[in-house]
Image 1 (spheres, rainbow, N blue to C red):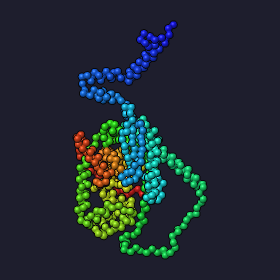
Image 2 (cartoon, rainbow, N blue to C red):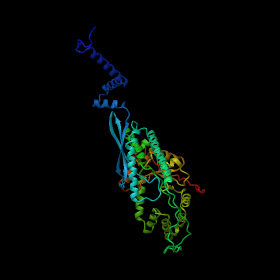
Image 3 (cartoon, one colour):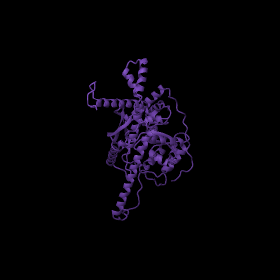
Image 4 (cartoon, rainbow, N blue to C red):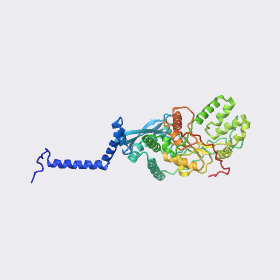
Length: 478
């Protein structure tokens, strides 16, 4: 019986020889299972005839085609300031590429936030505190649960990513609603019964003195109070920002453009008409006579309340009696004003709603709800994912309603809204005048897209405007 530890003729023991043989077998199986010998033979044979100058570069490019697709390794959220100096979040996305972690992209989104249990108009200090709270919650979501949720997913799978993000946000809404109900029940049990307060107005002469210098032009009608703004849930900006970051990462990894990533077909877009229109408007404003310029400024003015609107339009009627036919509908209740104007103007132009527009998730839930307008401003903010934006745009197209991508409050220099507009074939985009860095960045991106499309021979002219005529049927009071 021989001792396995006795050195063999080549100076290696039998046990070492057996271990080495097993190691070679495992290595051969490992390379065979990954098709390394076959692919190595193929590239060596073809490279000999191609004779590339950079041999190792050629080998690197060849084997890169067989590398695993880049997968999300982590996302990092940071607090930054938007164009107005308000708090918002920035998302940095990392991927594993060829066994190394690399930073792929950054993205930001405006932090449009209001108290979801809105009761009164918040003061500036209160608004700042709410935005700060929203950013803090968003960063907690990004750096912890959303980080784990998306780890290992491919950025190219936007639909799956957005589904996971939306489901997470919905769970947060349900948890908040459940907690709020519990808190309400506790308050009802512990809070003592309060007597109903009576009118505390000071007793005195109840006759109201007429205001001096104002003429009564029509019987007073009750004016509906301003509706509270649509509630926005704190932390929602995390959902939209992460969704956009994933889309931008996919674009960078594929070496393409965001608008091509969003669009199903190549879209044709031209910025020349937009630029010419902007220049004509600017020139027209500064060359009009004083009276005409005043009329223009009043017509596009922003009113603090309905009383101010009526007062300004009344003075306009007195100065310009010829336009009384247009002004008369604006003295009515808000809903009636909108109804009459929409029926009057819709055959001749687009009747677009901005202040009346609702959030994208609200439109997904309730639909267009029979509102009377030719189109709506869609803002990519808060919990709106890329998939949500596309879904609403398709919904509006089916119902012959124009969608206009626009900027939210506190815009950032992120120019993705330009790609979204072009990718979805939007007829219009609402960016504001050619001033301020956050706006100019979007215009610059539109010009870059135009140049890219022109080089590819895909730049054309949009179809003629077709104005959807709004029905003259009485609006539903509900």
